Length: 134
Image 1: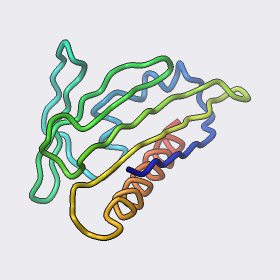
Image 2: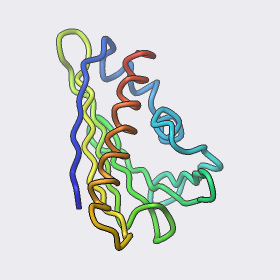
Image 3: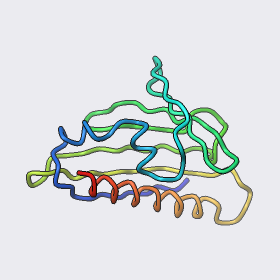
Image 4: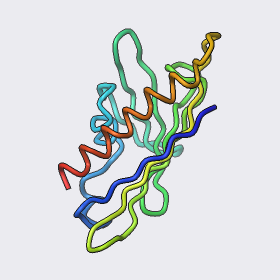
């Protein structure tokens, strides 16, 4: 399992970011998958996503100042994937931080490193797009 951490200052307050970010929007801002459906459940918000030849579900839970989300079930590109997205007040704006742990169930050398590289790109794109829209 590999862990990736990224953060970026954005000129919007955490409260302003609450209006910008929701589970479906987060998936869209990451840019790798299309949102097919969003369902509110007792387990959180379930977002069904799709990409080339792949459909799976992400489960989002609200946490203090952000979201926690993970791949739900066994279908999906990862053996496991967990992500924490938070926004903390900083200099009349926010420090948006994202941390993700990822592993992939492919019996190839460096497969977790490859998964972390891909995930790092998604997290950088997410932060770039949040900063651009904030």
